Image (cartoon, rainbow, N blue to C red; front, side, top):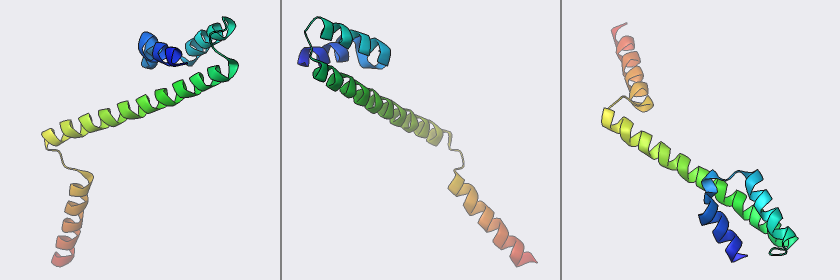
Length: 96
């Protein structure tokens, strides 16, 4: 089973392998007797979890990079704009 996980993780590259490709590979290993049906389900489930975790990590990294880039641009945030709107309202009320 470790051999299968290593093959899926390193040989094929989890990020680039479709679910169908992984299932075909696992089905072939079951046919050859190198993997039981129960193990094949575990491998596919683990592959799906790792794929989802990789996607979440990628999204987190992209968000962090975007935040850093936007911080460097020194753009007003939603909070900055909200504070300015409140200040304008207070000034308008004061002048009425």
